Length: 331
Image (tube, rainbow, N blue to C red; front, side, top):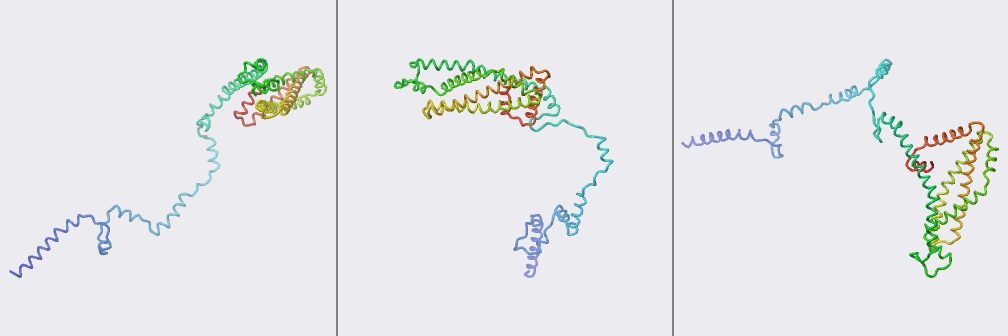
């Protein structure tokens, strides 16, 4: 009895260990902790996928062969032979329409744009420039005199003015009561009348025969006409600044910021410039008259030469909106 009890106790312990082994085998084994023995690491089971990846790890021998294989793969192809060149030239590839980056136009669109759309837009800008010049010319002859008459009417009847000064009675004080725009209109009318008076004293016949004497050859006609055209552009551009300066001077004069001396100086400069510009335009008209009365076709040759130079200067220049506006105003 007492001898069999220890034997039965050992059998019970073995049965309990056999029951606990399947449950422990189904549990997932994590990474070995520092407290686990080193033998537990060897007992870990590696999945077949990881075994395949571990087998694919390059060794020292394979790493040395990989640069050689890559050099063989990326080695450039031999240059094409002469036969390949002739074969490529004999069998060209197909051409597809390509659109540009800016306007998204293909080659065909650009061709018909140049043939149909550009002439239409050119005629439009020429008509616009002609109407603009006509408006400026008629404005100087119709609107400007009407505004001056309105200004004189207000000067003759000071009671109708909204801002009349009770202490001013002289003409200088009444002129200072005018706004700057109305004073500038009066100055423009005076400039126009003074320039017409000066130019009326010049005899066109003298200029005509003088031009005829010095333009016996076509080369001299072209040189003189080119010089007059350059002077015309210079005086036109400078005249805009002079008239704007006169306008600002009139405004400052009405506000008592400057004296009468500056106003008279600006008026004199504007008068000299307008008179000189009128003389240049008169000389251009005389050059055309000389070419029209010449025996040879000098007028046709002159027009072709001047227009060709003008077109050449515009074609080889970059055109933007400001230059287009300038060209429209010079029509």
